[in-house]
Amino acid sequence: MTTDLRTLLARRQPGQTLEAPFHTDPAIFRADLDIIFGRHWIYVGVEPDVPDEGDCMTVDIGPHAIIIARDDDMELHAFHNVCRHRGARLLHTPTANIGNIVCPYHQWTYGLDGALKFAAHMPADFDKTCHGLRRVHLRSLAGLLFVCLAETPPADFDTMAETLTPYIAPHDIRNCKVAHAEDIVEHGNWKLTMENNRECYHCSAAHPELTRSIFAEGFGFAPVGAEAEAQTQRFHRLVDTLHIECSRNGLASREIEHLDDRVTGFRTERLPLEDAGESETLDTRVACKRLLGNLHEKRLGALSLWTQPNSWHHFMSDHIVTFAVFPLSAETALLRTKWLVHKDAVEGTDYDLANLTAVWHATNRQDSDLVGKAGAGVRSSGYRPGPYSPDTEALVEKFSAWYIGRMAASLDA
Ligand code: FES
Ligand SMILES: [Fe+2]
Image (cartoon, rainbow, N blue to C red; front, side, top):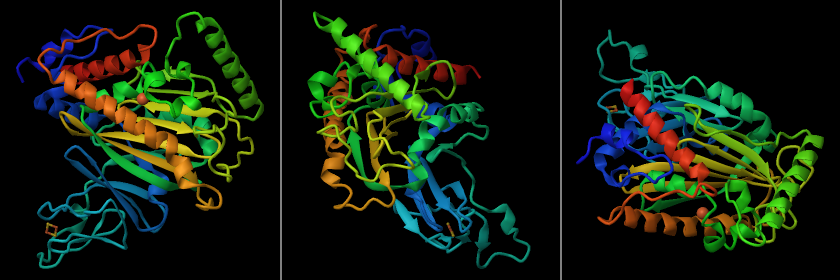
């Protein structure tokens, strides 16, 4: 690292993009893994990733390899994917359905609760109870799974869960299935992927499919020019109408924003959609005939949920699209997207997979291209921090300010 991390944190100018080393320097990347991904609540997936007894899922958060397992009592557990004998990686596939976790090296065998059950050739006084898998903190927020690698995780998860559960619960994630999942490697630091998500400044130019249904105004965009006032008024009228309809239907909908004033930052709001107003599809109508949970109304707009540092989600009446960002290297990140529908929905009868995934499949590629362009730019010697638009990128600033604040607080501690 050419400049000390503390110096870079201290001299960061609010309202400006981050200096290049935050997006390129391997030493800062290691600090991100340690401080941000090692000590905060990280979104990793959904309960329907492991719906049945014996289901396991593996997730890599940088060098931290994790197993999420559902035991025979349907309890969920998270462990380091590392054998307690000589440290071999235990599971090597993204998912598995197994009775026990058996190490491929010398066959030490663990239950799905992490307890060591069998270890051959160990002395009579070997204490198996001291060699269970190392646990990772795991919480389910109405079906969204978060892990924390720290010994003592941030204590504010419960208040976030209390606040957000009334918003998410009606979509009944636990009774969904993952209809489709895709991973994209983005050629930019994980923070460039997050910055790109936290604004809709680029939406009208970049996302012809997404902007058929969403309003950029819901994501911090402030229109300008001759039509700005009428456009803004129309958007706010639709928001007000949606909130009134939601409260009539007993659904939480109003904006709550704590992106930069909490350790576990988040934002949510139920936002109207264009035209038919039903879903983030090319024709703005539901993609799945079977609605989620006990929902009867198709036209619920989209519940937007963001969590710091690595997730965003769109909940509609018929499907959910959920996004997790995982750091891969200083200059690459993995974007993992999952489309969820009701578990009883039948592909080909209730939904067409191409229609269900069309908008975000296209949008992800457009975003990935933009992140790659930003990544290439910040790598170049000519890059200097630039100004965020105060009107349309205030929520990007909240991401960057949260990141700088958390890094500085952890270094001070
Ligand atoms: S390393 Fe796992 S059994 Fe030896
Ligand atoms: Fe985008």
